[in-house]
Length: 269
Image (cartoon, rainbow, N blue to C red; front, side, top):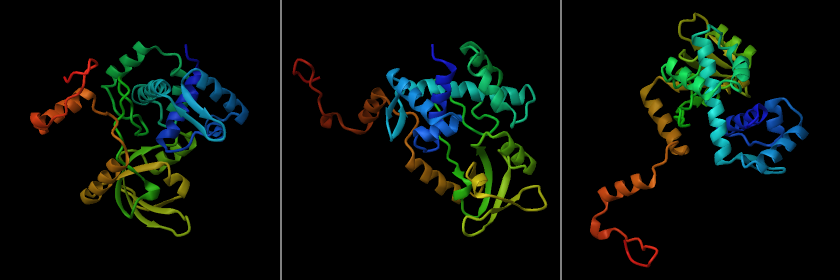
């Protein structure tokens, strides 16, 4: 049985992969608030268990089994967060710490009942994708606010679970679903000037805050450009299997031009 500590490590590494961060010893240590030496020892143990590949001074990457476990615990965490928020009345800045405790003790049956109760949701209170029961996650086509051009956007998700940060965003109404206009960007890594729809006065947010807010354009032409760019730079989450590939080829390649595959006896099939 996998311990809660191992689950925390695997989930942290999955999140770092999603954020395109290298899972070095120091990065994992900062993420989990533990000592570097503790992380090094655990990464070696997880490698022996077949849950990750670890190279000293380079970092670690999840194996297929390690990723499967990480996605499963991530699904538990985000379903619990949504349950606490929508059913129990927790604030979105309160759900993370509670879910961190519950995700390790609830049963698989409980998680699936939550999924049914909540209507098979696809997003948690922060707008993050909830993996389905098979472990699939739809790729987000949003962009980081920090990297966005001036224009109008809808807030899609927030990737920082710090309670104080979430409480600040709630106060400013910078939550998933909010429509905002990026009006100006100060030079030399200065703050961003935003106008939130429904607010009378603009607000200013810093670079670090903007890095954790992800948006999609409300302007059709710009959104089409963003979507095409996102799809070309990320691989598909669901890859076709061999049967699907063969079926597709059969529709477009004439039978006379199909390559015959040798069998084990040397005959053509």
